[in-house]
Image 1 (cartoon, rainbow, N blue to C red):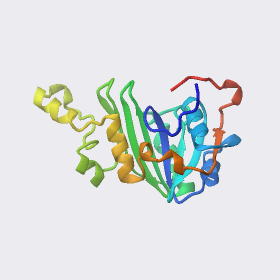
Image 2 (image 1 turned 120 degrees about the vertical axis):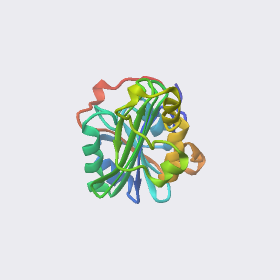
Image 3 (image 1 turned 90 degrees about the vertical axis):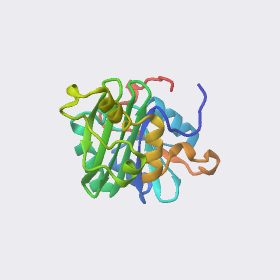
Image 4 (image 1 turned 180 degrees about the vertical axis):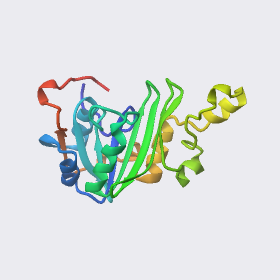
Length: 215
């Protein structure tokens, strides 16, 4: 498969405010680093590893379908502390994820070691396994991510289910949240990204276990 510039859907990424790719790569403890162009790096990170680039002023993006984060996802217990720890090193850090199957959509923001907001919806299971902090003004305005999995849901009538489900996000809603908080990566003009970024592997991941799963 040839390189396809950019990333957006069916993957996970971080947006970090006003940090260099080197600082982000250091916080992620990436090893076996390579300097790669935008098209090659983002394409490879769909398959394996993490690519850190600075495609727009003010934001550094770190992309990795399998390895942002490594070994778990936003539904699992290590996630909040992982994001808090990154923000202790990097300041303002946003996380986004979307996977068409199993309809996994998430976003979170942390600042200086504090997890301000985190939300994740798993459509395949019909639940919100992560709901930390109050919904932000952006979520409220968009009408998404504003309700968790509520304890009385088994007793809901059809109209209550419909109202709850209307607040759950699609993959395009993840992009809308990214645009509100930082940048929607699907809108980046690939031709404007001329600087190389840093590709590498996170701790506990070895180059010998690399796979070549396509997007």
